[in-house]
Image (cartoon, rainbow over all chains, first blue to last red; front, side, top):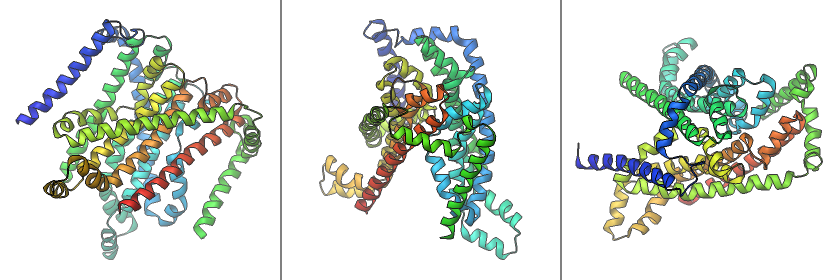
Length: 250
Length: 248
């Protein structure tokens, strides 16, 4: 390790330790109300208390997220290829896609809940909507950016439409699809958590919402840390997978 | 021309289908457009919700404060991360990791800490806007051509001059893009915060209409809130175009 790398590590570890230490001191010293800002030691203690229920909630949330994720990737990639590669579709539909992409989805959430009720279905639908549009927009862009000469050459050599999609277009947009998958997972998780907070009866969002309503700050901080760690782990795993795949593609 | 006609036709067909389906199924739940329009009229005439204007202004104020704070903190943190190599290498991965967390996990803690009033919405809007701005400044600084910096330094330019005259113009494109994303996310943050729990603002009106099953009023309120979103994005795109013309 070079000298600079050592300094970087020291800075990272040091500032985290310093932050936790200062936080502990401030909370213990009574400078902030421990009802709202619990000391890190109290948060660690809270992990044990909420452990089983929080893990069950997290599992529930991740399961819904997984379903929403698969749906949004499948639909996002399929519609993205269709809209991106057919010029007429692209020209006619692009303003609708842009409008739907830019609209805050939260505004339709009350409606979704009214129609689908409380429970699993609205979380999956809303999570899918959340993940679908970013992936769709990315894939449309990726298809448009495919090198025209590849398509022209394939056509010139008599490739059928099926071959054009399967052998030229699809391999060419793999990086875009992977980028979309990386982006989509966070959006899906976000969507599911929002629904659980808004109208959940199960799942991590519901757990966190009721902890906040009950002023159980240490438990709430512990739950927040748990979800954050889970989502960082998922994204890092996807990144690693991405690196492996791009290595394999050469 | 034909494209435009097709777009209008699709929109019209969609609205007609909605009208038909909603009337056939459950007009109260699915709100046909013919019911939403009168509700919008009543809302704008301040009949259904007399406190529409103060609510709209409150939401607007929360957005402006949240976005202002996000710009200040984002520019500062982004510059610190981008200009100092060690700080950048130490903290940029941490910022990146935090950006990978769905932001809404912080909201219950913010609500607990800042209460149900405007402060928690401002804090959440700030948090959402902060990350894209910081990361855009960081990316912008990293893409500045090092030769230009070396030349400026060789001619005796001071650090502040270098920043204003060389770096800012060179990263304008990325910076403005980040600022625009930041605005969109700040707006979303404030609205999400209001809908998840508030006593005043557009989100609380929307929740009120939803809770009382006043679905037509709910749709009207959503349409009014959407103008806020579209309006802010229009202003941002105007500024973006200006800045790009200036930097060319």
